[in-house]
Length: 382
Image (cartoon, rainbow, N blue to C red; front, side, top):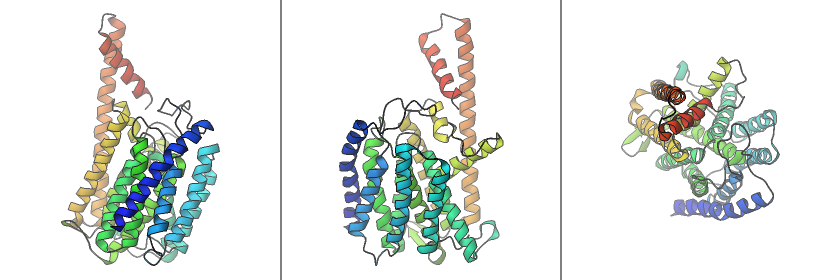
């Protein structure tokens, strides 16, 4: 019953908050600029969905989660507030990466040192088990900052960040419930409700975007839930339906695979090209799916489905152990990326052939001519 109350409260607060946020944003001309070169959308759309998400999430947690069930809640909300405020300021006036990184590192340090939520063991990955205290603090901080930015980077098409975040929250909500950690299950449920309320307004055609205030908060909570679950999985085996979770870190890697892989991929490519890894471009996985002719909804469904399949696969292969499971997940994702690259190359060649045919044959049907022009335009962006 309490899960339902938490979920519905977050959802309804967000659902009732977004329409006035949209109205005020348009009246005050506070919206995402569609004229920027990387922007996919062509309409004026407010980007303050994070305000509604944070409000619904905070309200539900404050009302329904007692402090004795989740003692770390106040610290988490304080650290999350830092990221929310810096993201909101970025949405309004724009900020350089420096000040955003300072805020991210500050929030991560608060979690690691004040709430004592840390990565204490690598489960044998790279042959490492127990971590010394300061190594644990350092790794935790960089992990949180990395996940925060990974979620920020996948917030590029309608519904994607919200859908991946919803899958994460539902998965962790079930896992924490099964492990008996109700406070963390309530926290995940509150964010799940807030995200679903937001997605009603963010699916194509989107009426509002999440903005940095939402994506930074989502990545932050996702990182904290990941760390907490890996810590729990060290001392107990969690039952998840017919599966027994014995490789917690491997399962977490599957839950985070879409934003993490996309971030690692684009950063690697940028470095190989001699540019800064923080230089924005249109080479993310969701952009590449759009270049295949998929719509925003279709691209989001593809990536969300991949995420779910990887989670189920990780649950089914728990006996492999963390190191082997993580390696398998990355190998599978690399294979899928290879298939995507091959598909894009095939379509590019077809479009180029059609383009040459257009120049040579003015009698070509308009449908084929339109296809060639449309695909070439999309692929040229990637």
